[in-house]
Length: 223
Image (tube, rainbow, N blue to C red; front, side, top):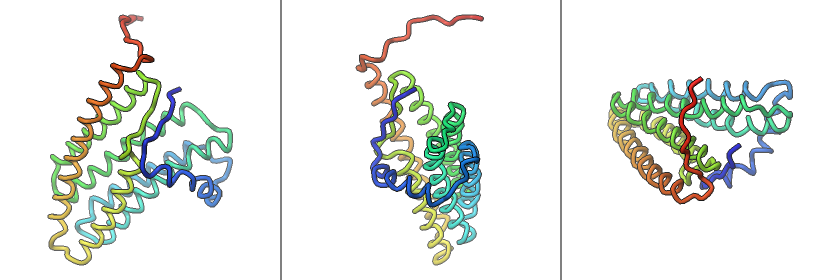
C-alpha cells in the first residue's frame, strides 16, 4: 500500500471538518462505501450536464456547481464511512481511484460543449488522464501517492467557483457568455497541459534520485 502524502493548499483547512460533516450526514452503517463512491459519480455526471448547458440557461451553472461540490463531499466522506464501519476494501479504493479522473473528464467535456470547442475538450481530457496515469505510476515506483499543491481539491474548488461565475454571466450578460466560456476554458486547458509537463519532469527526476526505487530489470513472464 502506497503512503499517501498531500501537499494540497486547501486539504489542511477542509479535512478537519470531514468528521463533523460525516456525523451530520447520518449515513446508515449498512450502506457500503462503494455506494457513496457511485453516488458521487452520478452527481459528477449531473454537474457535467450542467456545465454543457451553462451558456444557455443561467440555472445550469448552479447544477454544475452543485455537481462538483457534491462529488467532492462524497469523495471526502466515503473513506471516513469505510473506516468508521469497518468496511475498508481494496475494491472500494480501486473504484474510488478509477472514478476520480472520469469525473474530471466529464466536466471537461461539459465545459467544451459550453464553449463550443471539441478540440479544447479533447486536450483537457487527455491532460487529465495523463496526469492520473503519471500519478499512479509514480506511486507504484516510489511507494508514495502524492497530491500536488494544486490538486483535486483545488481544481474542484476552482470549477465550483467558475460554475457560479458562468451562472452570473449567463444571467446578467448572456450575449458574452460563450466568449467568456471559451476564453476561460482555453486558459484552463493550457494550465492543465503546462502542469502536466512540469509534473512529468519533476516525477522523472524524483524517481531517478529516489534510493528506495529499485530499477526493474526483470523480463516479462509468459504464462
